[in-house]
Length: 270
Picture 1 (cartoon, helix red, strand yellow):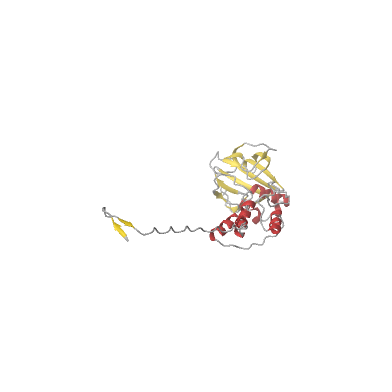
Picture 2 (tube, rainbow, N blue to C red; picture 1 turned 135 degrees about the vertical axis):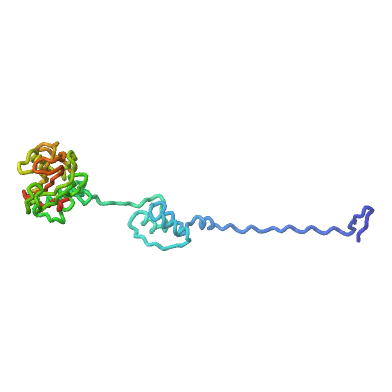
């Protein structure tokens, strides 16, 4: 029963309700092995840690971690890291795999590295193994360098009509290349200068270079030469200037290749 007051508020006349008891939750017992389980690394985590420590398989580890895949990898326990992993079931981050390499001796001499990109080394290999007379054309091709910066044939090797006498069947002993008088003439390969001077049989001013084992090159109709007998020259060195001396009808370079004293087609060596 309630009584209405003057101001309109009702006042309870019965006894006040009892307060509701507070609910107390019992604390669960602490799991003594929870921390141990949290500290234990999963197989995937162990593989990733090993990849980081050893420096190998990092990309594979990242790929596995990103896809969530777990692979079983069998690795021979030959190093200290693998042996420790096999014994304890985990990878020790403080150990590094032992790497051993057998000692090797590498020869960096020019002869040892002679290739198509190293024609001087290739020529030394050819001449060091046999006489120039036994070298096949397939083996000699490309072993000599160009005596001129621009190689334009004016008259080939072999029989031709003489440009001086008009006689048919003249044997041309070399390759004639177009060259204005005063054009630089280069040594076709390394060697020793054995002749420089006047050639009495039509060559005019002439330079001869001996490359060893019966191989020689000659440069003819020169306006001048810049080498002397006995001088060592290297491939590409300027040895003379082109001209039109001797039996010549105009400025050009007459280039010869001789094998054991006999002329051969220079194109088989260039």
